[in-house]
Image 1 (cartoon, rainbow, N blue to C red):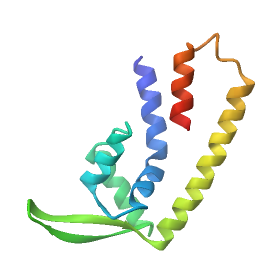
Image 2 (cartoon, one colour):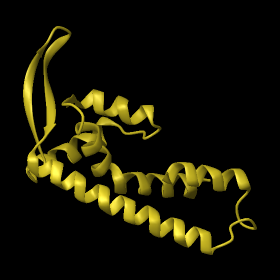
Image 3 (cartoon, rainbow, N blue to C red):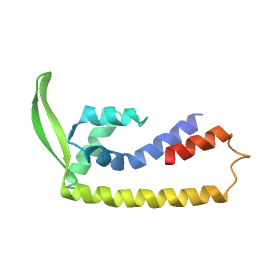
Length: 129
């Protein structure tokens, strides 16, 4: 079971850049908002993982940020996609759809019924969809 959690964690890490860009595609967001949005879809991310990714994306020109005063404490840093970030999101979205199609083709050509209970197969399909 520990190996299963490790595999899931590695898969999530591999798509977090894409997920961050997706979240920011609709509106600017504070880091806590990004974390909460990801949690709502069962993508568990902690600040220690998120901040280095945001910094890397900012340094790559995909994001910028602005400071806003907060009535609940210190000013907050709000992140927004740049035009380059929007293009990167489109590229990642294309890659994601190609990957899904490839995986689905492979899954259909393999019979998992002997290896995975049906309910597990359904979870995988739901996760990939």
